[in-house]
Length: 198
Image: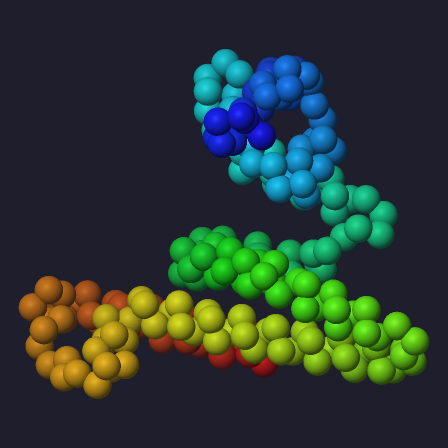
């Protein structure tokens, strides 16, 4: 990491080589993957234009990691679901949901590791049952968090939660057509949530 607390700048050249300005050395995607695992923050910029390429390079690292035998973490069903969200109404909500889910998972990973360690010596059936229970518990938490996040998109959520009257206050700011559109979007999002629960 850069000495001043700023992220290390990685320059990407036209020949696809990556240059770590912090160590003044050329690096590979594998080196960048190790930096991520070590908690070292970096950004990747095009050496010529200065364009931020961090997202593209991180995606490329995931692609390479997924291609390694025995390391795939994203099942085909998840990949299909992710692809289906592009261009969908849920696309604007999904990044925030995934970010919060990963933050929650990272925060609880020590507890999960302890539970997995406690399974040593148990039968495969016990391990499967405990693993399934952990997944279901995490899924419930994620869905609850997602529902809470979705309430922010409802123009009536805050006042309903507080028990306040919400007569015509919001209609002064929004036209009937806008409210109808918002209600339809909320209904579509709720329908997606319900289908994800099943």
